[in-house]
Image 1 (tube, rainbow, N blue to C red):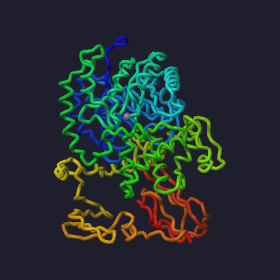
Image 2 (cartoon, rainbow, N blue to C red):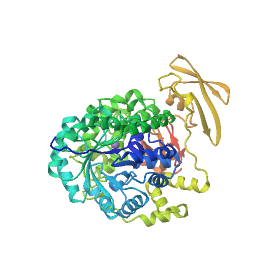
Image 3 (cartoon, protein in one colour):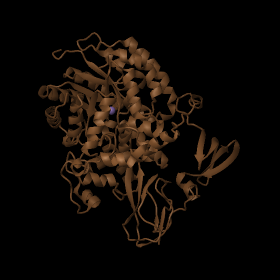
Image 4 (cartoon, helix red, strand yellow):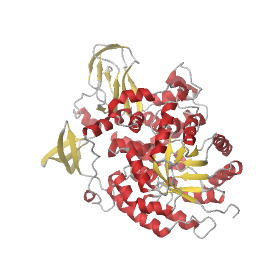
Length: 601
Ligand code: MN
């Protein structure tokens, strides 16, 4: 054991573990009671913050993410707190100007973050440089991150070069971030050995157990000289989450690599989170279990459950294998980006469009266009020139750092949000999520913040398998609340199914075949598209912007609407020359495929 040493442990229970298994829904109230014990473990760090936790706080839990951080800091005085930062994207989905990046890092440090794991989805180091410098300036630990993926261009030599470049940038440690669970034990050994032989920095391996291989990968990483592993306490481990903390601690116990962590204390913590997990049963998904197919299609776990939800909404869940097959093809077309936020959404959504439209690249999302213009940085390999041409025509491709095109924007953000922001942190919340952040700050001011409702535990598990579907709902329609219960499903006749509902206790009988059929029968109040001038959408989503008014003259191919689905925006075009007769949607409306949104004749 030539590299023998004590292995350090980062537990991701408060960030990645619940992000990977229950859609990032764990609330601060379920974290604080166990912090005293977590703080006694002796972890090298606890990962507590990241893009998805920030998003879920504002979007669903109606918690101030900054307040969560301050509370965790106070409750964990002896443990480093760690966050995941998307380089120039910070916690949002676009590139921010350098002044916002610098302010965000400083405020995250001020509020309690000690360790910043900084990555760029394309491994384009120009996109992490500003953030890394800001971390150093704040006197905190800057961890340079390699987003691991496999492709003809992603060789160990390429990753070693990246690690060296990050060391030159001032990195305090290096992380191999295997978000999809693509690492295999011997590939890990080779990669870790190669990096450790050339870069004298602590190395940590973050690998998801999606394929079931992560615990083995970590053992080989340790044998190759890795210094630290990311694990999740067992009740939130495995599958699309991480190797179980206790198992890895037990595996190394009594060896030269012994972590020194107390298994009994860890077991008590695991017991606590086992109970907590039950509260969030409605967010459990069958797509978070171990599945070796990730080694074939490279789809990260979090992405799988998102895709499954999106397809379910489209009544097209049976196409999920087609989407999984399409993802590697889109990825190749885009020059083999690693699949991690935001490239996972960019590739995944385009793959869904390609499959559901029955024709590849019939619809191209705005993000794919921006990507092919160089808007996210340098793709790892050449992109497909035909698709690039189709997406952006003869427009030029930016070869520079995307943020170099951005002017300082913090003052504008401060002006835009105005008095709703009571602190610089509030301004940054607004910067990360403009619409959602503003709504959150407005509701906070009005005293109307209300977290999403959780389904009571007793409605769950009627099947005894922990997978029962809820049959009672409370729905809000135009401000009025209705109690709806599905009381039975009838026989199918002529391709239709009867569903028996009870509405506020009164029995109702509804007959429909699918969501699309329901729309056809006027479920949304919009007519079914039947003419070439009927503008509709290919995916269920929200209207981001309406680009035309009644009476406007439009030409075929002109963008008339922007919709958002799966966090990606798409322009919807008129297919004919004509005049806008009617506009049936406004910004923020929920829309489903097949509905007439704009009528052009
Ligand atoms: Mn992860």
